Image (cartoon, rainbow, N blue to C red; front, side, top):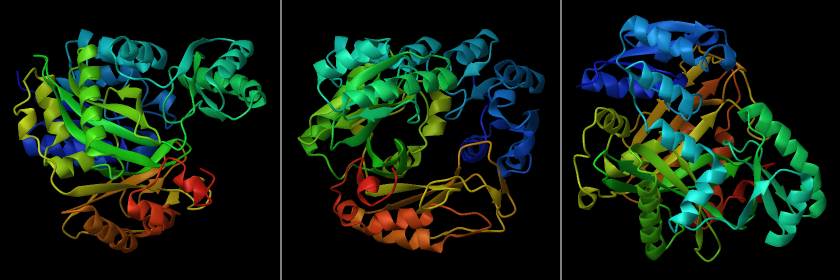
Length: 447
């Protein structure tokens, strides 16, 4: 049965992007918005829209029952969760399915399995996918100290249910472990409702490389190549590119194989991402599986000429992948730059009204924006306002076009991180493709 109407349980840039594909396919869309978002472009771009509640996400975008109620009211036969918010909430996915609505994502059981980082680590170990050396059963400071001594310093404390860099602390000494453990525990409880922690060896210098995978109900799993995501601040990605400029062809093949193996191990269906940490000698380790669309999915779309949202719709309807691995070809190179309403030096959010918003429109430049001129950036949500995706025949061409594209943006009324992005483009290590996750810190930022 073909999907006729999709409710998008999200906001901003990703909602607008999903609407675009649905319109191209002739699928009706329903936008939900908080009182603070009523004037954002995605609301008017959808065929229908409904207010979902007050600005705080707990009173609007995280209201599962309200989302389903609206979907039923408007006759939506499917729900797309986008990324963030409820996208990896297995309870929400179950509720959607129980109401007879199509869930555009993997099975709730897989979301739950991969959402627990400790269980995910153990699952990968059991099927031969390498994981970072660590300790999973950590409940007290004493446990943490003992684990750190056994693993060897430095280590990283992580929240089992975490994401987005929240609840992660690098510890260089045992005193660091004692200091950060209770903080990590309280933040994990506050943000994720689960204070379970684990500890991993801190691999440094390291690179963050992820593999885009796609899987159907017949058991077919394909990779759509990898993305380099090592330009980060506070463990959150800033710039992504594909293909990775830093790994050997042998490592690339192995990463793709391990990603497919990981997806097969949990009987994954849909579009997803398997993330790896790559060490100094190209040794690599499983980090996590994201059971949703990624912020950086456009770079994969650029090099493969595939529409990942369209594929999500097909797979949610039970269709098989319409091509084979041999038919997936990486063409050229692409980079994505996350443009955020932030102070470019301190990364402090910069809310306010956008008095001017002009974007580059040259060939090979794609801008996925969640705002327009006159939009108000509020303090309630993530600071991402747009993504600039640049593609070309090779990395050198993309580097040159990227700087020109970023310099062409005209955004007034708020501060943005564009000066930081341009500085990275001028950094020799980045230009050479020889960079790692501590690049911004080495450049003098509090990253």
